[in-house]
Image 1 (tube, rainbow, N blue to C red):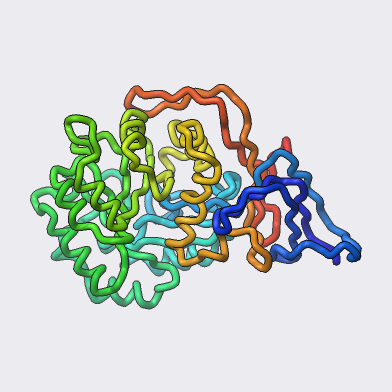
Image 2 (image 1 turned 90 degrees about the vertical axis):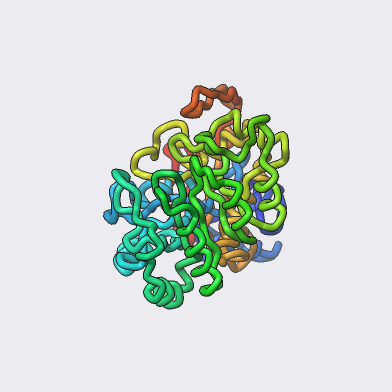
Length: 379
């Protein structure tokens, strides 16, 4: 057998099988193959010595905006994410039904990555950062939302809405109520941006199993903490009944003080979305998904926990579990190789908080469909 790529001696982390062990990966065409038997002659086109490095399925970005050309915040997914070891991504509502066809044709169909999305309930989605999209329920086009979510059911994962004082204005929670009504009828989850919302307890009570709470550690009051620094009861109950929580860090949507208090009370994220856009990519405090993972590694989460929330959990949302969240044989060879570098580093938030750490996750190689699409010059 002539293999295209052999990755030997790496620390193989498989979040689906929950294994963490030294081993070798064999790749032919676009698939991971079983190891050769002892009598088989092994040949290869490229051999990679990954001794001391972590080899895992490609990272899955749960929260980003990648309708490139469709709005001032949207990234080019392949250019930005492949060098960071990200091989799959979920766009969080950049498109509404009225411009979804162009998003699908120009981004989803043309990307090397696996791309799926949430459809914004606002007709045109997120066009600009200069003003909020219109979420007045009287403009929701139920017929067209139903049409697109059914036609593109393999791509559209659910509905997205942004809730904050400036977006709901004097409408109260009627936009959320209507979104939930639509979601119930379409049998879809919703993803909800929640910031500085006076009705935060009511929202917590309204969200259902598999709905996503976005920006869980944001610091604009009201927050998930009460005046005594305790996680509010409604949030804990939401977590218990299966509401999913996404960090979606953004430029200022997290604080180390908030994270510390929530961690001590057991409220940890289900997803480590970055909310990367044109205004924060390669800029601190977020920079990239591996940099964000480094923050939580230094907060005490293990690499195995991080692969659960950065690979396995979002892969399940994408309905690709067993395909993109594992290194098992006969799956597509979407792989990233990372180094956990011992390095003194200080992380900062946008609220004056900081975290001193000694580890940094550094991307060294990205393989997609069995082809090397990024390799660090030092690796």
